[in-house]
Image (cartoon, protein in one colour):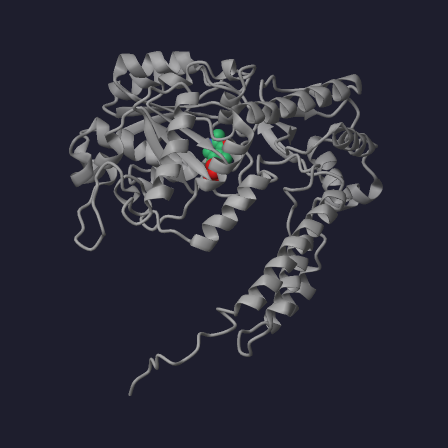
Length: 484
Ligand SMILES: *Cc1c(COP(=O)(O)O)cnc(C)c1O
């Protein structure tokens, strides 16, 4: 009857002996470094033959075990050909970073110990390291010393947390009764240029997508604070219940910063929660030269900063910071008998949206400790400086610079007579020489170029300019035919 004979050896394919682990670890270390170097000089975009790949994948049907000696090289090869490479220095993309080396080390450490951070009793050192980093970032962002927060899977979870905290503070009955505890519909405000994850968050939090009020922008991608004020009054007049203003500090498309002080004044005067979504732009707090562009961020009730964007950790590593040290335990509190402790102020499982929790912060801890704020200051400043170089090069060649961001993102429109932004972007992508995006900025299609790669250099900028210039020739017959 007994199914668990204690003399049974472990399953060797899952838990191999020491010598095999050393061999595979060494192989991975060396091979991944080589792959990274090949990627840096190769195509930014996928080159994989998907039908052939799908056939190979289908053959891996999990019936017969296969040796890791085969599987590891196979997996690395597929990723090398089968993803857009954020680690290529000509990926001018959506903030996704080439991870810093200390953050790669941190990922490895977290994986090997695999600590459970649900409670401080289980992982006291790890919980303390996370909290230490969060406090340091909050102080650096200008929040008061008693501020706290936690690591999240990303900006979306941090922003979702902000909505739940704001609802919980606004209405004592929200925790028990939900949205119907409000006499009118609870509504919150984002600008039209905000990240669209806010719309999903309206849905997720149960107040509905229509609760997400989109405020017009001022023609330069910033929230129009006068329009916000009018909308607040109108909504109140219609019986709705405003509870939160979200200011974006570094819009996703164009790196624009909403008027933080005006938003803070309005929030203060009306007793609303102010959240600053600085998911990627927040990295600028590292730099004494740049942090002034975020003036007012320290007045927020809460702030989102993603370390997995411009702070160059591996994904996902978001942060939620709040000046109200009690709100998180009020929002996420539960009592359980089976958990090893229940410290309402410290244990992440009762102060965050997650339960089981990975050691997320060790990657930013190692990076920040190794580089110091000064190292991170250099990292963000060199991105901004390279974008300024790019701006000058494109300006000289007749491109129209559409945005005026203090951060490392440029939105440009092709010179007169050139094909439209989408055609040019598609040609650049097809060349594999660089990755850029088409974005909507103030109602127009623009080419969006963002630089967060810590090893990008002037040569990479020149190659991008060359690829853009080559893509400006008149639309060919072939492309006409495709478009017809
Ligand atoms: C990236 C981004 C988000 C979403 O964050 P994730 O980490 O992708 O979940 C939200 N807001 C802004 C401004 C962003 O740039």
